[in-house]
Length: 572
View 1 (cartoon, one colour):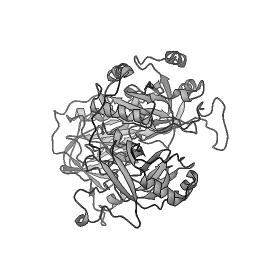
View 2 (cartoon, helix red, strand yellow; view 1 turned 135 degrees about the vertical axis):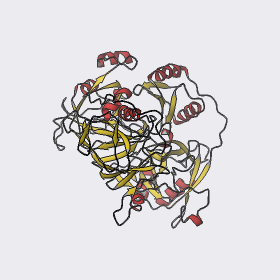
View 3 (cartoon, one colour; view 1 turned 45 degrees about the horizontal axis):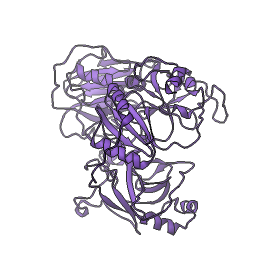
View 4 (tube, one colour; view 1 turned 90 degrees about the vertical axis):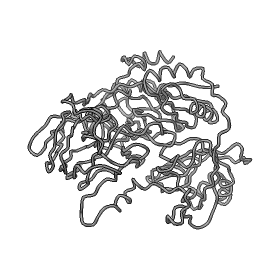
């Protein structure tokens, strides 16, 4: 049995395995019998990613997995599905040419093939399916991705890539070859489970003509049908707006009106502690990027640590509808209630009719995100047990806009309001990283150069990740392969998609790193040169465009700084 156990930061392990069959055996066994502290296990083409609750749990798992053998599992009650497809895809004929067959034969093969749901990833409800060994068919599926990915693949598109077939659950970028489309919803956040296809399920595609309306009117939709969750689509949000400009409320089952938003700044989102353990369905953790700031604001007000807060970039102004206690933490900013200034990380009583403004500082190193908490926490409907807005998948409440009405929970805090505390903002320009798990994909000396470079945070950064550039990057039309240019790879092969964690530093073909943050994709196909340790992710979330950042290589067990030479010696 071939295995290679790699560190992916301080709380995750990536295991290389020999085949997809072995991956699925590990996944079934670890799902049925979790390791100590196991949060989730994410299967991919030839890897298993295990996310754990603590650094100690990760170390114990690292030792235990060296001799791990998947247990034989009794046959589970996996489901069988039939998905109706209209084969009208833009790439149908070109894909048939790649395979050396006619378009009609491609449709026949794709619909005759029995497919096995192997693993999720990329997006909620996106399930990678492989040819089932029990199908009785012996078709060869080896289809390259498009050389130029589409910026928007429509929801319901049915595609092929490599040996995999899948349905896009929502509109998103993608490079798969599109054969057709289906109206079968692949994701319903209100269903259990939300993803239509679960690992181990089987399906067949059924070629049809005309249009399918799986989710028509309520009167014609059977009670067991799944309808797509449109609660986070912009069109659904727009439909709730009134024509007279009256303030709009975010949907919430309970709560008391506390604020009307006068100015929402550049971005204002609801966040809490996020969604854990759903990576298999393509759902990332999300949640507040600066967890310590969100926790401190809630703690000062006597709230539970998971209470919903507002995460803001660019400042915000709100008018109170009733008396309410608030606390603001995070990025350096001026907090004012009418003309009276208040310190951060301090409980403040706001009277009805008063205006609260948060005016952020713009100097380098001041942080980017402010956190506003109210006594009891904000009240907003949850998706998958969280009110966090995930900007990649679209899960959670829509962004807060001017004119919105915000509500507070009718549940009082769990404790009395506390005294002032220290604002926990950390904006250091150095982030500690664990090498790899794919640092060996890069040319000799590139890991050292990565750690000795002052990288610039670009304006294309967001909650998905920090996009970095060199401070003096050459123009795009200049080929700079010198030692001061983008990072160079030693392995030019295509990396099969594998699990990613918050802090993974992917290096795409342009050689410029991307540091994944809380809304990152669950799987990715570019090599990860290093991973930011969990303790430094709050600081990463406060880096603003124009800030510079350097990475310090540390030992995964002691977190003491190590040189790249020491790291190489330890691997050998």
